[in-house]
Amino acid sequence: MIKSFEEVLKIAKERGPKIVSVACAQDRDVLKAVDNAKQNGIVKAILVGDQAKIESIAKEENIDLSGYELIHIEDLAEASLKAVELVSSGKAHMVMKGLVDTGIILKAVLNKEVGLRTGSVLSHVALFDVMNYPRLLLVTDAAMNIAPDLQQKKQIIENSLQVARGLDIDLPKVGVICAKEKVNPKMPATVDAGELVKMNENGELTGCIVGGPFALDNAVSEEAAKLKGIDHPVAGKADILMCPNIESGNILYKTLGFLANAKSAGVIVGAKAPIILTSRADSEESKLNSIALGVLMAAKM
Image 1 (cartoon, rainbow, N blue to C red):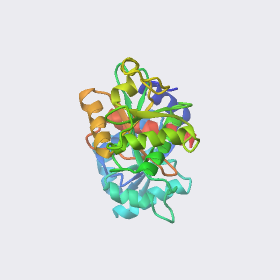
Image 2: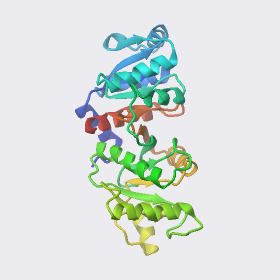
Image 3: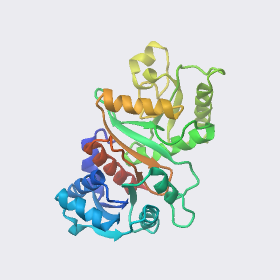
């Protein structure tokens, strides 16, 4: 099991370099992140986009483009589709969003002819290294699915297992997070949590141990779980936190990052290959971590 981002970067270097295709690569922050990953031996890159703008940014940032393949396409939708096609054709292992709206690149990912569709929902998985927590912590879904139903939640958990496998977590412990620890018909999230546990117990949801409903403290604190009398393999030991909706997931994501100063990474999963979408608010370290996480996933997919 990989337990820190230092290990993530080290092992990504050992299992890489993988090839990332960057859609609309004329983005200063993304170019810097990709070059950082390249310098660390984690990736090689194909830059798809406006070549003149890419070269101008590279000159300003002292980025040597001699080791990159550049494909000149000015149109954002065409560049996104080409970047995705490079992955679906096997010329690259993952795709990264550059200076383009998320909706445009996701439309390319879902393209019926050259996209990366699997039939599963796409979902976001964040990875955090939180001080005083003894393992890396995955949080899903903080960015994609607004109010997932039971079957979508099942798929979101299954998607997160791809990330866990990349981190060498053999049997991830999934804590389904709610506001309380007991199923209450008036609280639909707790009902879904109980159903997800049943799915896990009867073999419909495999490759993990699912526990819930849990309040957050009982999922990450063994002491809190003990005080509540909760005896379950996941209690206090969660590897993955499954949030009930996008609001709770997004709040937890930003709380860990901005108030707890946790190191982080994030990927979109549910496609045939990792999709790296970083925000301008993400630090350079977070962008590098996200690329490295994509490499670990690609090595296991």
